[in-house]
Length: 445
Image 1 (cartoon, rainbow, N blue to C red):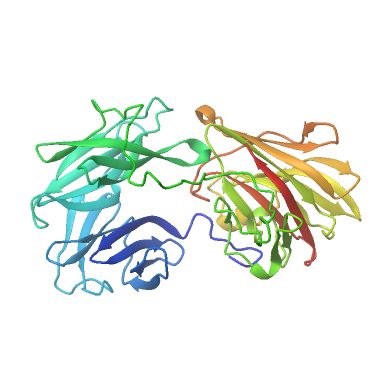
Image 2 (image 1 turned 135 degrees about the vertical axis):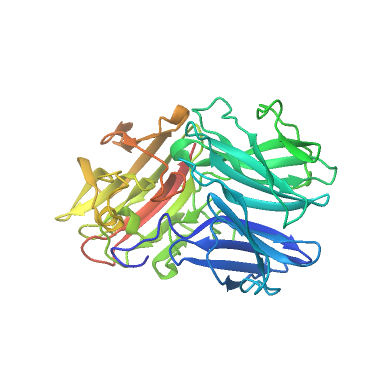
């Protein structure tokens, strides 16, 4: 991840299982880059978590704690298995239960995966996602049995796209409230913006879950808050990077880094109101940059703008605002022969058949170059996800108004990054390290 030619986008943790049992919280997942299964535990969900491994690799796994204190892990794709674990969850129990419970083998598309297992009123339920066999559309399925050794029977429980581009609602688990109401917590693919959570009411008939109303997700769902006095913070927002009163600036919760941050080469100046990145490695392109500060994008449209101060950059540096994913686009200030230029660049290829190394080493394609008189400039990125248009447009302020630069960038949601598109503030070096760029007055609309 830290070398010029290395990153692990699209790898790492997928489909984590979160459980609580007898005073302990558990998070279990596999990492596709290390091919290991990790387990994190904590007594207090807001404090220190302990990390360990479970022997084996369990795709889209779900931990399950039975009433008799036996622990199991359910996992797989097309073939869904259940395996009993040792009491300390370190490895499979020798001589313990290990069996195939559901088989979707031969499916031409996405077979059963994304397992979530529960025991409700003495019966065992497992929920999955898969696609229909006659078309690409994600659907939710459920199978149940009266014992872990018995036959699991069931089928599809939700086949609905909410009228949106044949993108089905599926994958996730079910939860109940203190009042006895049940809900499915699922998601729906929305193209390049990523996956959007969908809450679906669940009722029961003959001990089998019924999702939605007449097979459809209701347009309006009325719920009762479990924390009526709690103040919810927005997931995205503007930031002037200024400290409040005499306090130091505290990074707002809507920000996330693209990599583990290199804290020695980043700075938040709350007195003057800017975020600074100092380059500490050479990069071929945007995906290799460290300390890129990102925010998720919102459906159906959104835009962000920021002021870049590139006076501290060195020859060959790039500093700017991007639409970050595998098929990224960016507007950036760069320095060439001592002069400042504004450029719009994007990823040269979106072909997933290319080797990861070839894709990662691509320097991108430069569509337009504009000479600027100074290294300080205001830029903007506008994104449209409506009906899966999935395109970004890039602008710079010429002193009077915002002017488009470069081309519309087509975005996507694919396996190479496997996240929704994000706004990113970035700076990276291509020739020498030690330059810096500052970002101020970030506006998100």
